[in-house]
Length: 631
Image (cartoon, rainbow, N blue to C red; front, top):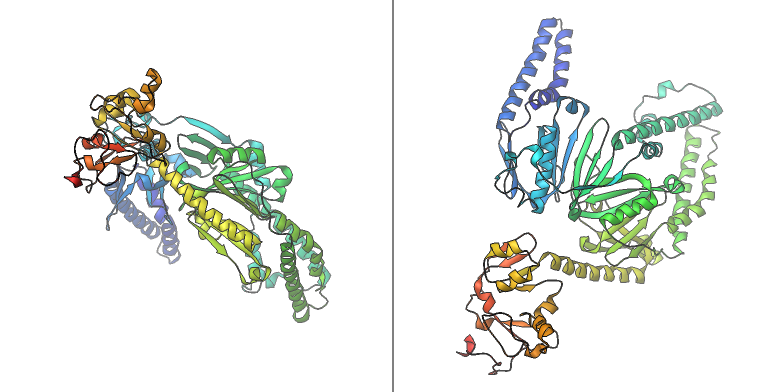
């Protein structure tokens, strides 16, 4: 499949427009004349169009059964095969110009990638949407029946793709969008001006008039106030542009979002790839009863402006609504946080007092060397804020252990509640700085595969008593192993049967009649003990006839026994492989039907079951032949 034809001139102009302008002005300024300048710019543009035409002709992508294949390159060719199972997000973005000419960019994010793994720039918007949905369907395996008879996604029309129904979870209202802008602040302008006025770049020194210290101080106060106002306006404008038309919905096992005013983003977040949830707020949001929700996946998230894998699921909503939406993704219960010991507030107070002392020292140095009569002791008034600041820092920290999740809470000015499923934890880290060792406290970090872990902002229980921290670390390690086992069992369900695979697939995993007719012996990972204790269905016969379980006959016509298998004390009936002719040193043929795996080897139906370990030389009743090792 090819790119959109209108992408050729767009890509050419995108790459060389700056060079064309520079070449035009350079040629015109050297008295070469307007025709020569236009010719120089036109030559560069024609060269770019020729290259982009070759790129368009040599770019190709194809949806195969297991991978998305991308071939690109003019001089240096690149062939990429991206397995569907590794794709985390498929993001579609459009700028204002791209929407006007009818093209869209498709970015593919894979697990663990530090950048976009594959980019398709540019295709038509309908094709971009169809490509995103088709990749998700093929990845989840749900399109096996829907796409029968079509070898590639390109053979179906854009409107023919049938996906799961979408359920809207959140749509930002005009009032909430205005509140997002009002509570946003962009401090980059302040940082730039501080850098310019610091003396590192002598730009503003020539604009500072000679005046009294009082006048300079008043001017500085007004300038700082105006600077904060401008920064707030810029932050409000950026937030309004980013979250205009924000919408979050659920479709099958993925979350889909759309946002953006000037540059429109739409993408998907597979729920199975979610690493952590983060509910964040600040004092202003808490006073108004609002919060934000972010979802973190492993790797890089296209269109997130360097935020890594963190994606805003809900930019702002009432706190209750945010938690309800978070429960839609991960059901973690109602947390009751455990706080650090109260004595740790003294540690925070000492830390803040040292910061105030440093500020006083800087003011004193400025008064001594630069501007006499400066009230250098002014920053000391901040000591009054040290006790409440230390208390608030302690109050807003804590952790909670749920049945399946760890929740941590940190921060006051920017408070974040992090939700981590136990099975998503990669490692549990016990961290103790030299100052923490003096206070006999420690920090326990639950590290995940998300990008925030790389930045040191993963879930952490900070400044807890050493004994409690050690107990928390051991508990997390135990629950991690238990959660991994449970999660693995849910995925590794399988069935041994004798018969045709197609018949079992058509009847479905819950069709008891078809399974019995085929001689199936279902071993569900969540009900192993019950299925193993009654592998032949004797309990159903006993219920219908009144015959005790031990005397119930086998419902399978291929073999009859007078008594059922002896049930050992641990409740597990183990197969006796000595009666089978199968070579178990060779792996069996496993067939993935979408919901369970099957073993097609027919000799498995002939494996006898035994209730426990036999004594040496002992035969169970019903054994007609001695075991292979007794022959």
